[in-house]
Length: 450
Image (cartoon, rainbow, N blue to C red; front, side, top):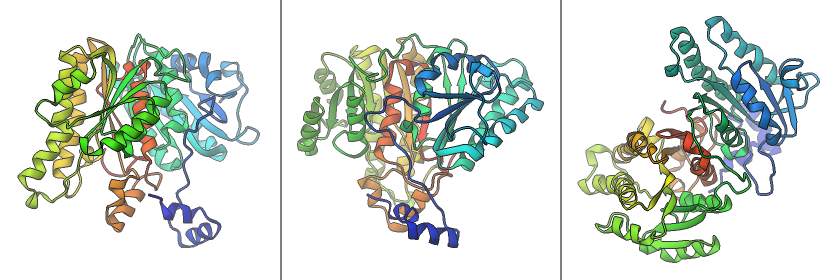
């Protein structure tokens, strides 16, 4: 459903009233549109000294046609200044060379001048080294401090996203894929996140269709977030297999026909569901997205056994059983990708959702627990944790709770199913084998949870 306050706050009359009353003034987010040829539609500023920044330079021209450096002569690029430079759409700062507390001032020195020159919906990425990989405790402390800085910066910018990428040794060649996602409108509703890249042998060969030649299964695909995921994976070149319960077979068939895919009507909690799914995917599958989920909300004092078990069975038990069945049968190909849809409720908890929060926390735990074993076959498994997303489910929430959910994040608005779908599509890419056992929040940097 539409966000009427967002529309009003950006109307001519609404802007005056919002400013007079000191009300929140969220800005419409820029999202990816078909036909774009470059991830960054505007100027990109590179800063910081270190090997990671040097690794970005060779492909930076593929991200945008307007490249600048923070200092004269750096990377053989023109220097950007707030007085004479264009508005900045994206910023990349290599903080991997910061190893002493005194050097942290470089964060202030680089970012402070840029506030005067930010374009609408800017995207910012800091690059560092994982603290746990460093032997020097001071250097490790300095690199850990980047998390506090990046999250605070995200709350100050608000209308854009700020992420921190810890890059492992040998993972430098996977930076392009990560920056293509985090510096583009595909990550419109992602901010304040920390991800870790590790070595990965696979690469994307065609950035216009990064999933070409891949077969993807999406559960709960008939509508809402599941349908958006299916559409986005198909847009990126994947052959899609859409699964949902038999009761929505007509909608499922219609969507699969439109996307040139195939539908499977199946109750994922049926006793023979794993065997049925393996049979339905006789030719194998490269990408598995466990999106199917339900809510049965009640306070714990009023929670029935049926409400509890049904949510655990659909949201947590079924993904585990189906994934294991696909692995045991060899249906999930080597170098495959598994993406689980979690929720910030599984991170922060939520009143009246103890069953749902338990299931979604378990989904995150499942990704973390299975990652080492799956990695032996080159398979990655990650979780996407949406915040408040505008769907039919959230439209049914009482007005006051719905408005609170929309506004309690740095961007002051709800996300769209497309925002979740873009994150899933990124995790599904060949090069995203550089990430596994991780959780990415798509929540506008929610003020709730970690």
